[in-house]
Image 1 (cartoon, one colour):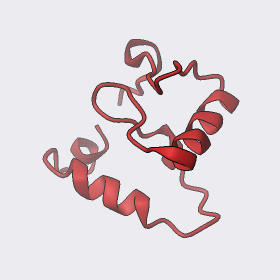
Image 2 (tube, helix red, strand yellow):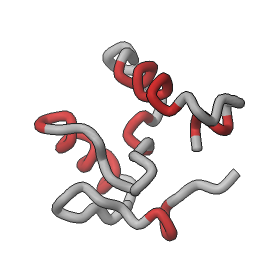
Image 3 (cartoon, helix red, strand yellow):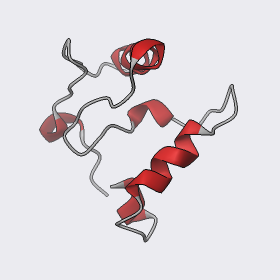
Image 4 (cartoon, helix red, strand yellow):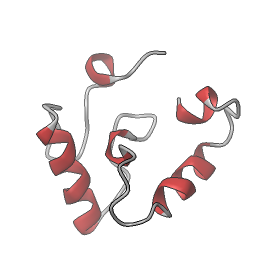
Amino acid sequence: DVARLAGSPRAARQVGGVLKRLPEGSTLPWHRVVNRHGAISLTGPDLQRQRQALLAEGVVVSGSGQIDLQRYRWVY
């Protein structure tokens, strides 16, 4: 959705690359970006960090890092 909104619907990997390179302390809400299946794609400590940030915003995250896109997807 982010790539499509930016005008490049086939650029999802580039969106991921930009988010990965954010400087420490960035205020961009990177943690709200999940894969097209509604799952956190990160692993290890980064997965836990994203899960905690989503939970802090009231998003229900399953044990496997899945969220309900029907409920939480932002529609523009």
